[in-house]
Image (tube, rainbow, N blue to C red):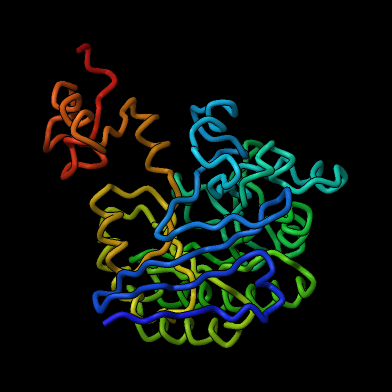
Length: 343
């Protein structure tokens, strides 16, 4: 059975984003079409599932701007990029007076920008969020991000889409009292962000923490219902991986994936192996960030994918990480090229 879901374009926040589910299977996997407004003007269209290019402070790690420009056949439709507040925090006092948005400021004016709160390739440090705000770790050291500062940053940066501020400091071992603080603050943050950004053209994306459901499923469902009271004000859900070794992320995501409404875009943030990405696509995820490539590059590894017969024959002669070794993609080790290998 297949069906089509269209997002209504009547909401004011839809000016920079439109998403259509074109085909959906009974197994929850789906194909769609995403339209995002370019910072330089015009609209880029993308087939989903897709990747947002992971950046650090607005730069694609290990790739120069010139190489980035040459990587894509369609020069008129550059891929969307992901930037985070913690890595661009030092820019926010300069971007506003410049009269440019964040994408133009860093030289990526043809790539629609998704602004997340945290760098998806890094895990958060627990114990620092409180009633004053949430903690981020830019290059200058820890900063408390309150609603006023968050709103100013989003207003100055003018991203195509941005992740709502939320109390992310929860895990599978969080106590009930701390969990309820996280859920209550996250709902309050959403209400305040909506109230403070009535004129914003940026699309609002709402975080959902898997730990809400792992610690207390009833509390998780209650919080999701509270978030959905504002469903006409946001266009997507964000689920960020918490790098907790005791938690099976795939299993925890399955707990919430079928609770999410089908008309909302689904973005999963963090480093995932190739097999995990495939599993998450089958669970209905529409987009990822490419932080796995950043992580592999830092580990002096590269992906080698057999796209045709010639590439497959070359791959057979290349040194790869041994299966069973401690690497990101143990079950797909044949696709990993070890650049440290002397061969």
